[in-house]
Length: 210
Image (cartoon, rainbow, N blue to C red; front, side, top):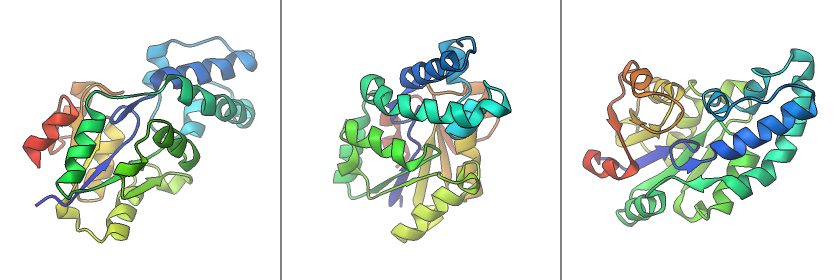
């Protein structure tokens, strides 16, 4: 009996890739670097914004780059982020069934909440837990375990849904059933290699599992 579904944010419930790419390229150009492609930006996310920026700039520029990126990104999220197909209907339906819902994201709390409020998703979630420190980042199980602990639900009664290899590893590390959803940052081949509990094409397919 599944009592809780925990979701990743980017690439799972929300498409913020355009906002990420625009903020990244604003940062790079501000620091005198060349722009990167949308695909390169999209493939580089998943381990928090500091790690993301560090992949494109010299170590000496990471701190300044992170400040520029965060300042730009708050507005970019509100301009360009959109919901993935069927997100609102699926969350609403799960909520009506009495299933608890939560978010466990590697995004810093500040920006996760900007996204969630802007897209009017806050009302669906019993808990939102985000990574603000290095040890909290997926694939470490910290975020998922925090959700289980605070909502007092056992790992066998929960699902974790995400679009990246980090998500599947985090779910397994937390001993919950890890569901891989296609259409995010990782390919089917990459996700299959992690041996998730199930692979789904879209959020509506969750109902077949639950």
